[in-house]
Length: 186
View 1 (cartoon, rainbow, N blue to C red):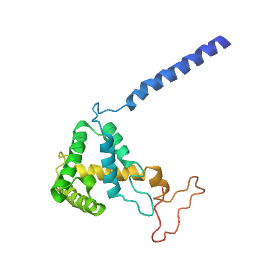
View 2: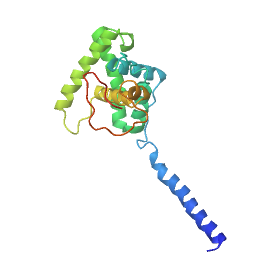
View 3: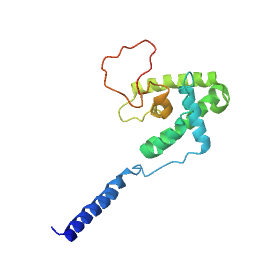
View 4: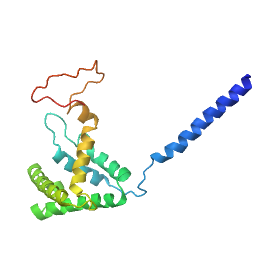
């Protein structure tokens, strides 16, 4: 093989790789085709909901992990149009429930009132999910709670501070004693 032929083959191979990569990466865009805009106030509202679900204790809470922003990305990029609508309407329903229960918006409630309100909603969603048919939509509060947990425990704060974390683990030890109160491994 001559040098010129080798360069042509390499160019063809490299060009195919670059073109093939861009062709396959086209599938990484949002498949929903729809996205409902979230305002900065919505993000703050979702942060407060998430922080009520996972408040700061010995470790930072969900607001510190920016779970509200995570929720907006997940809803816009991963939820279909129907679920996006349920989520957005659920944000309003939660605030309406706060107004009905405490005569004030969720954002103006004190931490204990927020907690009590979300406990009631959690009970409501558990009953709904137990009775729902396969074709029925998911309860909006369940979506919020699941996204809160996912966002928090996959964040840097959730992985490094809420759970035990070893950046570069050593050898595998399959028999580690558990002491009551130990954190889960990240």
